[in-house]
Image 1 (cartoon, rainbow, N blue to C red):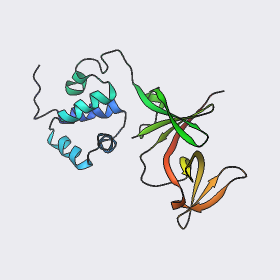
Image 2 (cartoon, helix red, strand yellow):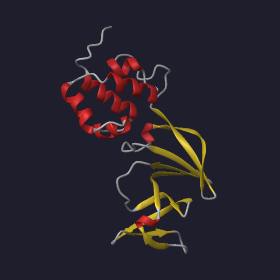
Image 3 (tube, rainbow, N blue to C red):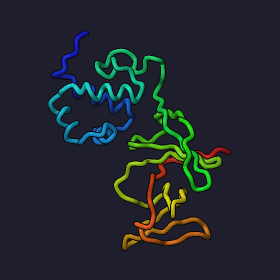
Image 4 (cartoon, rainbow, N blue to C red):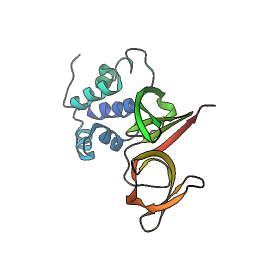
Length: 189
């Protein structure tokens, strides 16, 4: 089998989007650490992205043959659409490396670019570490070097409200360090 590196770029890029489960070319560019323009150039010119195909195969476990040609199974070792995500444990205001946790891509949001899994007691959070702005929602954040997961409401004037029962408060957005926005929650009962 001979690869023609002057064509096949569009199909390979679409297969990389499937492999990462990221959903869009923009998200793929962010995952690969390249500009959208660089990826768009390869897509529009149909130039085969050999360097990114190899990176994708190494990071996802997807078959290099499938990524490059579309032939054969997506996973050579009969693996399904499973992602291995880094997991951290949140204990007493600190994050500790734990291990990895496997997720079926069907259970994860396709908009996740740089996901992290955080376990705290009987709750497991999947959160996005890559974000452009702070919006309303549940966040992994640092308050005076103590890490916690809190509900956040954005207020006018660069202020936010942190909800935590009787310990709720308002402060400037710049007073806190935002680490990741929670995308989904799993509760062990």
